[in-house]
Image (cartoon, rainbow, N blue to C red; front, side, top):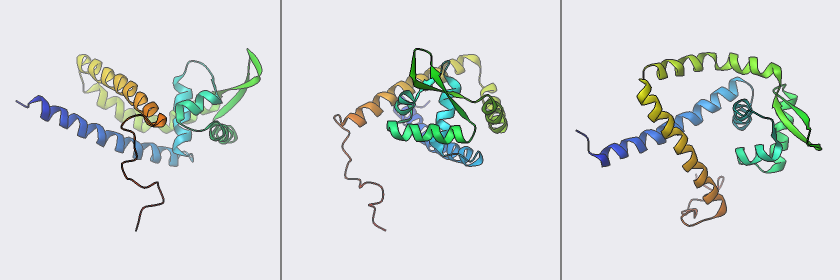
Length: 170
């Protein structure tokens, strides 16, 4: 029988591997669709939300500045993936929604990967799916909390001596 310390270490290692592979998958899927990975993440967020999002909300959810989020929405609109609509509560504000044609294009792109992930999930009994869902949900909550802490420069968020991108020696 595996002790808890070893089990926790294995979960941590597999979580790190999962995040690394997910980043590669996101890049490959975005490239296949002619998008930047952040653009694909934005489309995913728009698809999951039950309401249109303002560019400020998109900036917050993607970690972009408001100006960068506006440029992201411009790219998605130009590519036919998103539309801006006037906010009924404030006509000066635009809300962003998936373009109707985008739903089909996204579905087509996700057909193969979606089938593979559905097959994976089908291999787990319901009781394990409940645990997996809870881990992912709570892990996302912890992750968002850590994003906020790191952005705010809180305790333990120092750069640890790692130079900014582009400053590494060859």
